[in-house]
Structure formats: structure tokens, C-alpha cells
Length: 112
Image (cartoon, rainbow, N blue to C red; front, top):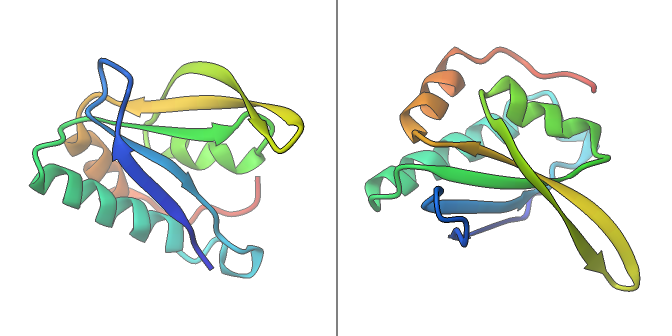
């Protein structure tokens, strides 16, 4: 149902990085993504990571999910998956407590 990658961020401003989250369509809009991000943000704070960056494919309409949680667009980059090139967009929270606040106040997120 879900895969995520968490690592220390290479971006100087952001301490932690969420590489990706994938939610199967039948589970979207049920709060699964919010629950995962909230759990990750809490864990990052417990390990003294005070900021976070996340990458999403630029053409993925569900990247708005991060915008609804207060993520600020940071930059984009080109990546290669197999033999195809894609653009990724980065969203960041300089203060994870603001992300946790957004998560506690968030309502459902539906279709893009």
C-alpha cells in the first residue's frame, strides 16, 4: 500500500528528507498520507531533526497534498528512472512544528 524513504537531507537548510510516499488510489482521501507524514514528523523531532524536505514528481497532481500542509516550494531537479527523465519538485518546512500544526488542523484531501 505505501512505500516511503526517509534519510538525512543533502539540502543545507533542511535536516531531514522524505524521499517519497505512494498511496494506492483506493486508499487516497482517507487520511493515510496525513497519518504517515505526521508519524514521520514526530519521529524526526524525537531525533532532533527540526526541518524537513519532501520530493514529488512535478507532474503529479497529488503534490498539492504537501502544499495543503504548508510545504513551501523550494526547487526542482531532474531525475532519471530507468531510461526516462522526470522533473521533481521539492517542498520544505523549515520548522517541523508548523507541519505538525497543519496536520492536526487538516481536513480531508480529495482528488487533485
